[in-house]
Image 1 (spheres, helix red, strand yellow):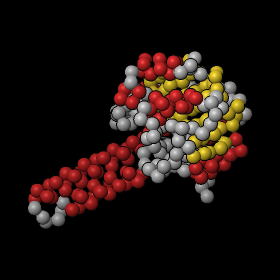
Image 2 (cartoon, one colour):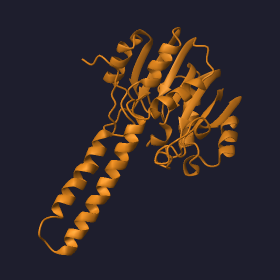
Image 3 (tube, one colour):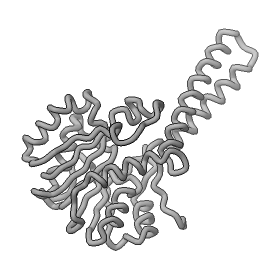
Image 4 (cartoon, helix red, strand yellow):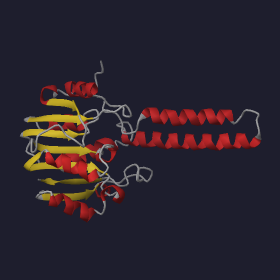
Length: 256
């Protein structure tokens, strides 16, 4: 049994190894004495896969605790924008290996925290690791982890006093309109409850114009919703500041 928590990495390690492995094989095949055009194609393809694998490895390193620590920085941004007194129940949507759920339980010793995730095979997270992490951090009695879809939460309207989520909504495949995932998250939040969501809210293809998104959320009966671009809070390295990494990363927070 592990003695330290394992919160994983947003970059799937098997994808890194797959790209690097394919790239290495293609480069080695380019040495085989076949037609020169075939060798050139193999070499170029190998270089491309090696470059992609190296880029993913770099991002993974920047996210990790042993590198740039950007995952934890972003978790803290979510928590720091949650205006909650710690009494009652909190929900973490897309909990992964439970970092936010565990952090909430540690920060608010009077609160009960539920973490949900789909835990699909594409991701290197699991419910059992969440439970193990909670036990290692001493909050197992105040945390619960359940399998569920963020597009259809198995909870009553207004069941929670606080709701958080980090870098999840854009990944929900069973919701074509990602604004519907935001709406579902707010459905289970009680009137007057607090929320803090981090996602690619600057991506207009997913969420439209920011002002329109905020107005739409207000039309759902949310009394206070604010927007924060994370780039205004800390410097993001150029290679992380891309559309598929942290280029569109931002926070929606407030009270329902």
